[in-house]
Image (cartoon, rainbow, N blue to C red; front, side):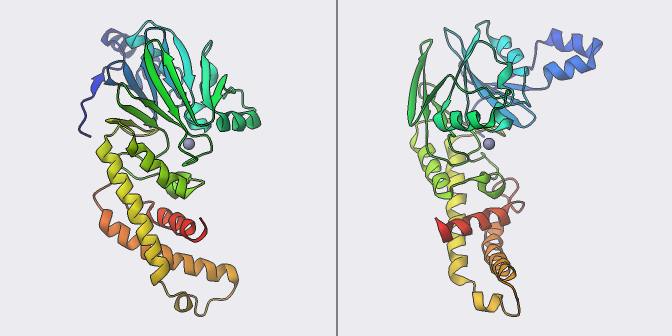
Length: 306
Ligand SMILES: [Zn+2]
């Protein structure tokens, strides 16, 4: 990525020295995270391949997501840059890998989409408390002189997944959407709704941001998201081409049983799409070839049913 990111040493040098000398265990617990200031007062904390973000305001600190992989390292990260207390916790969506450590936050106001609240009411998981405030389409927050817009673009990954947009900082956090420089996760980011995923990428690009923060991986730029949009469009074109070009009668010749016939046909469709994607995208995104089959198959199913 091209944006400038100030990389912070993980904890104060003296602490690292202390822990290195006296306790390897404490050192790894405290220091095993990355803290990046992506804009003045806006930080990304990363550990175990998962991100959370926080915004320092005059009143207090607003945290987005509480991944178990980060756990209480978030408190070390926050106290590394401010003495202000954490006052708000926003859930990007209901999945455990992003909010499964929410229970360790005390005396905070938890905010999420109302679909997320509904899911968490059903899960009844003490690690993921039900939010105190929720909304359906959009919520504008003004906290300590800072503006946060919470937007619902539709279920690109899970019902209730939201965008957290900081218009003054031009920062957008969209968790488990596209991955800058890499591939969407398995089965197109396990989307329940491929058209909603495609629409969400358009909505990302309509926002005026210059730093994109995902739930996993490094932050990216708007250019990274344009590349992701191109990849998804290309998948869709090749999925449609496969449906037009693969000769079902030829493919299923000699195969018996309706499931076996369906499988043979879908395998042929998937191969037709994936072979082209692999050639076109090799070297352009990290991991091309690993999930191409899954991405093509998911897109082909969507083209047939959505
Ligand atoms: Zn998720």
